[in-house]
Length: 368
Image (cartoon, rainbow, N blue to C red; front, top):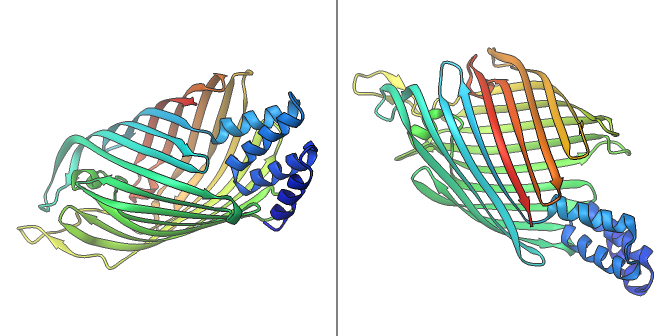
């Protein structure tokens, strides 16, 4: 952040020199002020029309950060449990030069042979569920700050959401608050209108001078509820992630070690009409350790791939363990449109069982 005012001043004092403008653009990119970076690239192209590296940087920034619309379809099958058909739409645009507005809408058709209902008895479940978020955000360049507020809907209820991100060089500090987000991690959450209240802090930064090693840490406090019951259980959820860029030229190779934990407390007891204890939202404590290798590159000029593989286990429940594989193939002939297919095979560690998740998906993405 200290370099930004000096670079901005240098560019202002040398309006006919392209180099200070490009230096300021690079700093804005690093800080995440991408709208400002695009403005600097525009100014640079006035001073140096057609300069190749500037044209490429401008196009890449618009490609990565500009307004877009995304839709994907997936089938998810969990062995001995549920089958889900999932459709999701996401998109955002810029009402003003520093404001973004967007939406996230998801609908699922679910079938499960055995679900714990609110009355305390298990039985099959089949139905549709939807959830959505509408939001507006504002980027404040001088402070390296992004502030976003939104409305959540789903699970028979609605609530607010908020996000504040502070950027400094390559460091990111983010605070998130959500009230009554529809919670679908378990099929009981869909059957019983599960919802989650959450306060979360996130922090990430490079840990070496070359920025090949990046560490991230998340800490969240959660309260879970279902229809008519606001506090089924509570939890604290720390997550730590360490990623090393083993190869930075294509194909890119990253190695990641992750700890995804959640520890429950204050869980309420529920009994059905026969006095049998049950839980309308069967969340369990977990501490999942995973080691993953990811490779990404291009098959052709227009087709890229990403594959990853590794192993994960739950230290609190050693039955929940197994390999994890993912793959995605994307085709992008023009910068404005791409489509692809993806696949996930994983142990369902977050459910505290030995079940296997198989998920197949297709997506379409347009940029404008």
